View 1 (cartoon, one colour):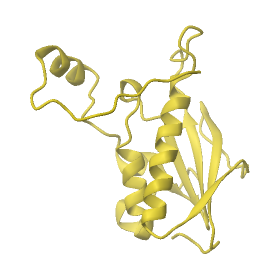
View 2: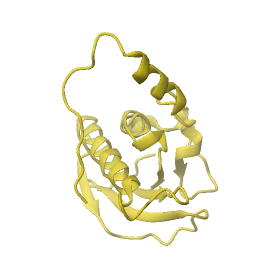
View 3: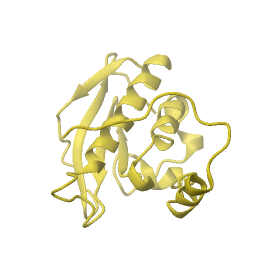
View 4: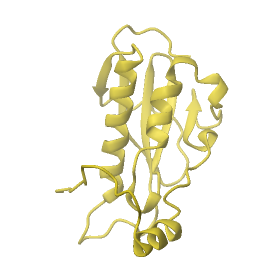
Length: 153
């Protein structure tokens, strides 16, 4: 599925139309940290104060752009790995547009990897479903594994 993403600098002043659209979509709001990130499994929310060296990479995921601000990512920190899951919004993927939330997941993963490397946590992505029990409408996407293999939390 092709995707187009804007680049450049934000306008100094938003138009009335853009301001209304952003307000209606709640574009400047983000889901709480503890609803997006977990430790070991989905039954253990991860608080910002517990994130340690992963705080910046996780914050970059949290602030990643997403179509209509759905924020579909859910991440589980598990030893030296971070598992990425897509929390699907029912009825959102359409035949004409495809699953836009997959694009959101790719953007979030990119933000995570860049921030992790800058934080001294080099690694890469692999497809290794850990078999964790996920909430309804939540599917495994990929895993970020650190090169050193040391526990992240």
